[in-house]
Image 1 (spheres, rainbow, N blue to C red):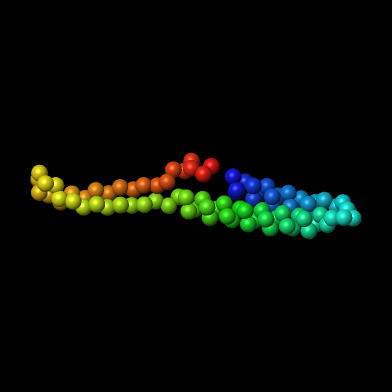
Image 2 (image 1 turned 180 degrees about the vertical axis):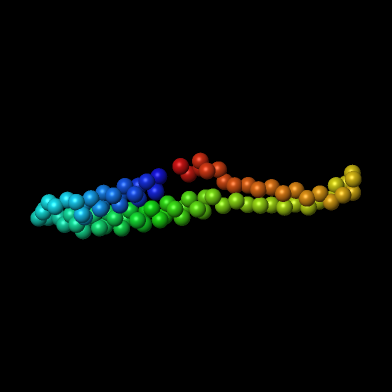
Amino acid sequence: MSIGAGIALFAIGAILAFAVNIEVEWVNLDMIGYILMGAGAVIFLVGIILMARRRQTDSVTRTAVDPAAGERVTRRSTSSPDDSVGL
């Protein structure tokens, strides 16, 4: 969601800064466009960082002795967080 919102803000800001040639006395549309572009870039980067943090995995290795056979048993498990959480 935040990646799409960042791209949308950046696009709206670029349109206001570069494509709209309307002079309004009480507001500077170029400055608002630059502000929206900056906010969109920040939101996009925050979304990328949060997505990268969510995709980390944990690997656990456990070693035990099987009492029946007297052998050493190693179990490995890998877990990753659910990708649908936080959407």
